[in-house]
Length: 133
Image 1 (cartoon, rainbow, N blue to C red):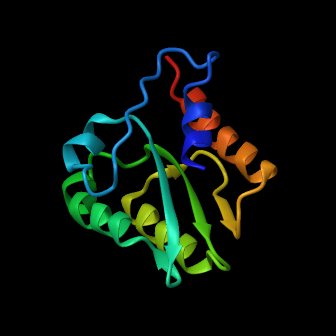
Image 2 (tube, rainbow, N blue to C red):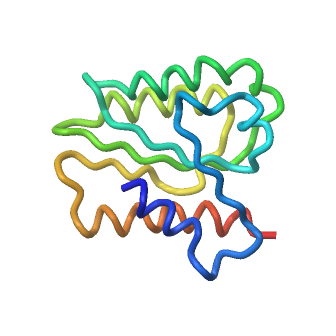
């Protein structure tokens, strides 16, 4: 799913947008402050977002709260059988940050199929196209 999102965000028709990939545990508040938009991905673990994404939000929330309001974001969630809790958690944090969802969440329970991967590609392309100069 990650590769499909990145493929959409870096499609040839997307111009003037630089895509920077960071693992959740490596991303910093400086990365968030320097970015114009955000694409997030997480597995649904025990009915919640991954611990890594939770740690990311814990590290960047207050340092980025005022300066990133209104920035566009998108995200995808993949779980074995249910993604409801993870989706609810990401929505809660991003609402608090006042980020603006640029595309519908891609939520996949079970193995991702062709339509799911296409939705991930669209997610990446939509967010990136919205950031074009």
